[in-house]
Length: 347
Image (cartoon, rainbow, N blue to C red; front, top):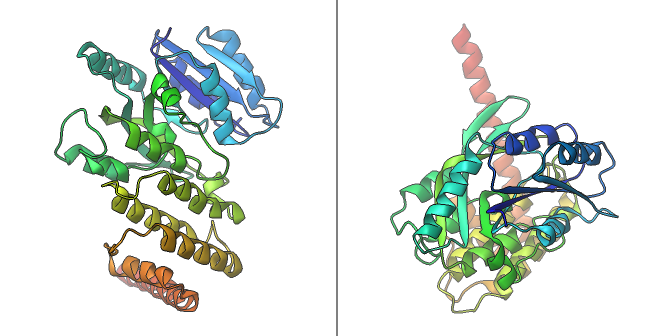
């Protein structure tokens, strides 16, 4: 039984898949299983998966009979996994050099100390295309500076809740996933309803303070394109909170995080490109607020964030739409002034 299984779901990523798989197999970790799940990809991704499976004993390619989406493709990989730990890596991202060995050494060290981790959170860096700029996660640095035990629960170090809610930044014990029936559900933002229940259930969490994943920011990615599917984010947060006891001490913090996340998606012109869809999103979020707001809860953060929350709570969409227009105009003016100042400085 290998220590680690890396599950790589594949769909329309033939331009990126080789870099992803090379970043895994070239690290030379022996105690490794790699499962590439071809989600009925219409391009050459499936052939690339077969190519790597034929060349590397640790790699296995699975071809699904129909396209099922990212979450269910991950579930299919998990069902085939045999490693003690599972790491879901997206096929358009790639692992940093030495990441697998660093993860394996940390997992083994904790096991030797008699405290097998349920979850190891790893740091990442965003890679922006086509600029080629890479920036390390600020939230992970905040967690690293937060006092608390080295092996912890979410209650002991709540800052872990503010990490980007993605599956690929967590290496999770397979028996833990099965024990708590943690699988991915349908819909966009499926990581939300998997990540937070896992964090809340985990009794032993570790954090690896080094960049292990390069997260590619590219045009054409699902979260960079618009449409009705972005309303799914409210449904996934509903799944999280409706299964959390009303008196859970972390419920207010999770509610705060969920509102900010949903408001950010709602206000994103690329994801929610028209006013009718944004109006539907607003009232769906207002219903979510009415259902899950903890007694006496008050929003925190910047003034504009507090104001947006206040308007959502009172279901005042016309005022939200007007204020949103004002914020856009102010931002455009600021950008225009910056361009003028830059031009004048060149003289």
